[in-house]
Length: 235
Ligand code: 5GP
Image (cartoon, rainbow, N blue to C red):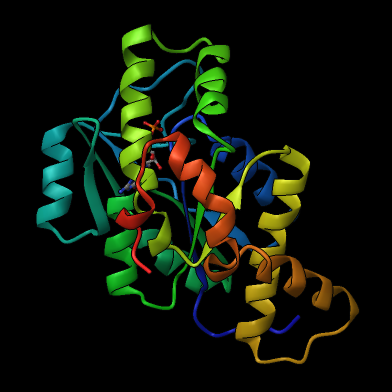
């Protein structure tokens, strides 16, 4: 497949517990030439996390020095900690002829879309609130208080679903993974300007079925389960 000269930037956002990390990991294992932007954060490492792998862990002063030096494409305060995407990753992807995947929150996604309007944004939704609550409890990472806070935050994030190009309802993991790969590959094909063939048509069809305009009806019961009024979503 011939490549577009500029890296394609894919943004993936989702409420905590939606299965985003698993999907992103699977995607990176399947799609070639797609780099993951390792964010900088001031939050402390959790569990098996290693510096430079999931995140670059730095302190607030270091983060503020990076802001002052204009080293971030975007940065935001999430749950009281700084998180940011370094420009360096986009430059490196460009040098390698790779595309770049950003796993960032809704504030960061909005900033990237302003700076890079061509970026492709994907919002991952849980099938409903009860499933998200079950997943958060089942992974056994958080206290009850944290689970309740994550659920409130999830509702606020979900209100922004219609600012994204694609919506992925993560009900069955394998199916969602196929859809995510299809979106990435279909966009590559589309932006390369090449005509599609056999397999590409299949990707395009699957990707199209996840476009915001195609899923508006389907997301209504999900919004309702989070008490997000349909009217809060822009038409
Ligand atoms: P966690 O601390 O659970 O890994 O991530 C918390 C939230 O921060 C997630 O929604 C994640 O997508 C978001 N996040 C991670 N890196 C960045 C970043 O570089 N910029 C922004 N804006 N959000 C980020």
